[in-house]
Every structure is written in structure tokens, then in C-alpha cells.
Length: 139
Image 1 (cartoon, helix red, strand yellow):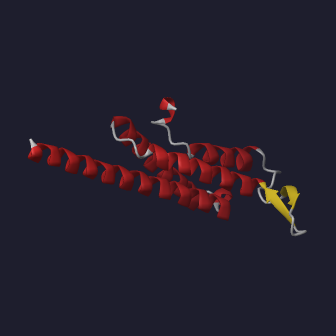
Image 2 (cartoon, helix red, strand yellow):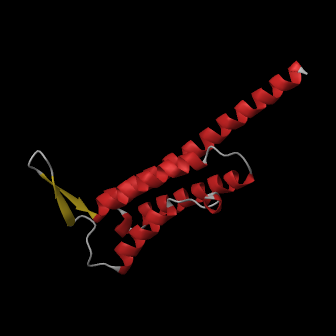
Image 3 (tube, one colour):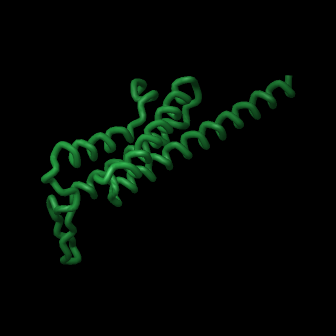
């Protein structure tokens, strides 16, 4: 998992979304792919959009776990996540094919990654400074 430290994982759903809308224009993100029959008797249908968002949320969890590490690689990872968010926001505003609720949610997930990454890193750094200060005062 060490190779994943400097790489924003949310670029994967961003790339998948772009491949679908730009390279496969006949494929709809909202058409049902399959459905699951529930115990209640209802059928729950899944679309590409649904699966992409679930996949993105799982990747966001991994990103938040990665942000607990402190070091040069984590700073690079945060900067790349911020750059990815800026690119996604620009694409959302400029490109008509990105003006969908799915892409908006992907962009918000990227924003949460950026905010969580910086917040967790700052909090961990403050804790490390407090522990170092405590050790110095005990010596």
C-alpha cells in the first residue's frame, strides 16, 4: 500500500466517468444495469452512476485513512488531491457532459477528501507538537 501514498485515488472514478461520457456517448449513466430482488418484494435497480458513486465513497474512506500519515508524501498527496478537485470543479463548470448530479457528487467527494486530508494532517501535527513539548518539559 506504500505506492498509494502520493496518488489521489479519487482520480480513478473521475477517469472512469470521463471515459464513459466522452468515449462511449451512447452509454447512459442512469440506465439500469441490473436489479436485485429484496426480501421486501421490491426490486432495487443499479445504474453505472450508482456503482460509480459507491465505489467513490469506498475510495474516499481509503483516502481518509491515508491522510492520517504525516510526512512529505502525505503533503504531496494533499496537493494532488487539491489539484484534482480544481480540475473537477473546472470541468463541472465548463463542460456540458459533466453537468450531472453524478459528477457533482464526485466533485463534492473530492472536496471532502481535500478538507479531511488537510484537517486530519493539521490535527495530527498539533498532537505531535504537543507530545514533543510535553516530553521536553518532563526532561
